[in-house]
Image 1 (spheres, rainbow, N blue to C red):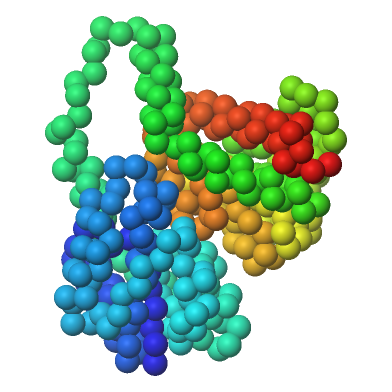
Image 2 (image 1 turned 30 degrees about the vertical axis):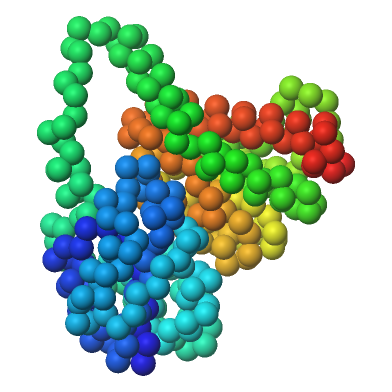
Length: 335
């Protein structure tokens, strides 16, 4: 009986060992999928992984409970799971069963999907942060609020310019492909991210800077009757996913915005979109691993401050609009 689990396994710790031992006990063969170095950078930021993919694979293969390790390049292991067809699919308890990528597929042929409780007190991200915390430069306390905020803004955007060009291009390519094939874009988010969702949809439907054909985009944050009915009749976690069920079709694209990357209603919308065969673009911050891990492409702004993340999100969305309008102008995005 094949058991499959996946993760980055950047710094293997006691929590990983505990999870892998319990996973192996569920079957006879444990296969572990690990994100490639490029994939880890896409979902955790440019300062990761600490250990390269070959080193991470070697460490896992040194564990007696692990039978095979497979490296995958995508952000999600969905295609790998389909090729392996495991009897049991396992993730750690920070993932709800309905959030586990590949769960619907495994369940379709009678397989089991399990979320196993994590061993308390262990996290690779926390370990890395402890190592790095003493290396952080001391901030100049003499800066005013204005100076400090503007310096943060410049630092974040400089980092994006240096490290995130490819991610911006990959997301733009998905949006262009969506519009070229006659499909639509859906957008969702909470609070300021809801405002960004509406803003971006308006740029697509109307125009950004150049006159061109209208592009089909719907913000799932604007229909107050639907939002309040869904929150009242179901629960707040389903306010976007239910709209995705109603409005999305295979080939559409969902732009899911969450500065934390953990908003339950946004993650629920992502899983609904994936079930329908939609592509997913995530927009989050430096800690948004969960959203990045369930997206086909993702923007991870290198900041954990909400204001800086939102400033970057709308700037990047404007860049997408400019790229799309340039594509229409040059014929790369056919009318």
